[in-house]
Image: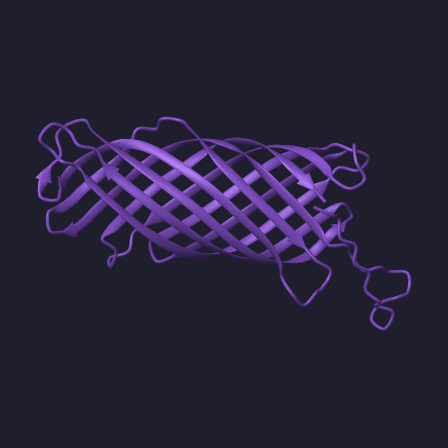
Length: 250
């Protein structure tokens, strides 16, 4: 990928000493060592009335992200993210009209896709960056209750799109290559709340004038609480743990 330089003539809007910002691209990938906890309750009728309880076994999940910032103020910048979550647990209750035996295993896989248009309110102003925007999070969930003896198991998939408010704060420590950053996605309605919060530290290596590689280490916590009377699946799930990855800045 190439570094794109874009200079805007803004003499009619700002003083001649100011310059248009550059287009910036950042790409990151890594692993999130998260521990699931909580429950999910199913009440779909037709013999499907069960409960899943996570066994709080740590699992390492992959994540990738991309950030594109451009110099056109009226258009939002964009951030794209993908995260995979894998969690195991125990299922009880009735599934397809069959009672689940004691110690019946369950598996939940969640693929999360985040599309985040945002505006840059501060751009390294006094070493501080502030972004505000909207996250459109799409969660593809695949839930399985595994067979156990005469019990034949159960499988279900569904997609949950959720709009969340998005905020990001970043502080560059002067005279170093160290950055401190935190971002949050949040929505609450009625008795339901979903949030995704991260805090990290990163270090950028000055080994190239075009591509700047970096390392990031942080902590991430995510909550998915759905408790609406109209919902046949109610959840109170938490996924939390440390993550680490590599970044490229163009």
